[in-house]
Image 1 (cartoon, helix red, strand yellow):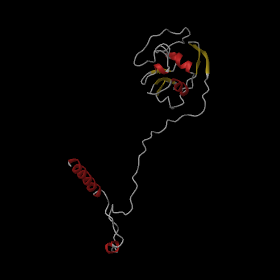
Image 2: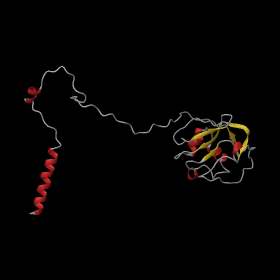
Image 3: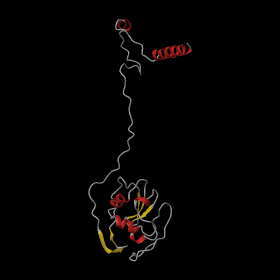
Image 4: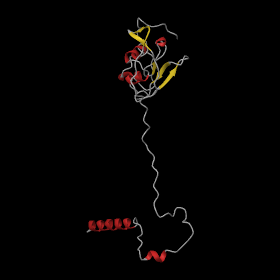
Length: 187
């Protein structure tokens, strides 16, 4: 008997609550009696048609992906760790290479601050160099630039003359063996 009473109370409460949530219906017969001719404009917010609610897109703007294949340009100035020196040029941010580049006094890219989610191949493509050359540039102060050892906040070296002075890996500066064919260093 108690359960039946509880169920009835719950059902009646639901009906009362739902009844309060419905809009009042107007009958067509009552409408003409309530309507009066008026030349006054409707009050603000008293419009008869609902206005659309503006929406804000939460989708992030896509990172520009520069089209066109980059042609790596080898320089006739020697090698670094067995890899020909290459011309480094910044082609702008792209998916997988959204970090910040720093330039040297001559305007050429000098270093790159890795962003979370960057990928070494996309970084090499951004600077129009081979992955092997990017690895050679960072062979002394890092344990390479592969996916297993690339962290947001890392600094990558982009100049053959600063192999011994620029770059870090996960907040540490390593001291790996210098390549035999290391170009003259400037700092």
